[in-house]
Length: 95
Image (cartoon, rainbow, N blue to C red):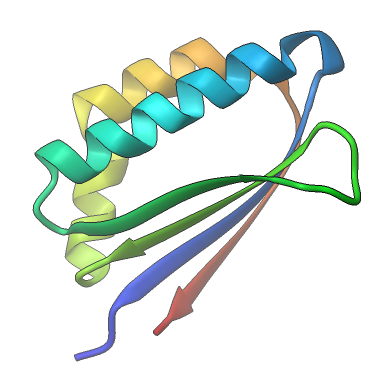
């Protein structure tokens, strides 16, 4: 069975960039600790584009990704960071 990956490109408000990175990294670590289906959650800062972040998330399957989306900690994270994000592109992939 194929694993499910989510690649997310985010442009962040310059004044919020450092805080966003801290929150995203904490969210990624938390997701891996409490979600058995979350196999990987990387937060990467672009070296080419200022204030650009790429999230690479790998889940055991589609159900694990869906569980992540409806989790309480995801809702809390989105509430914290939503106003910091200028643009968002999501790519759901099989791996």
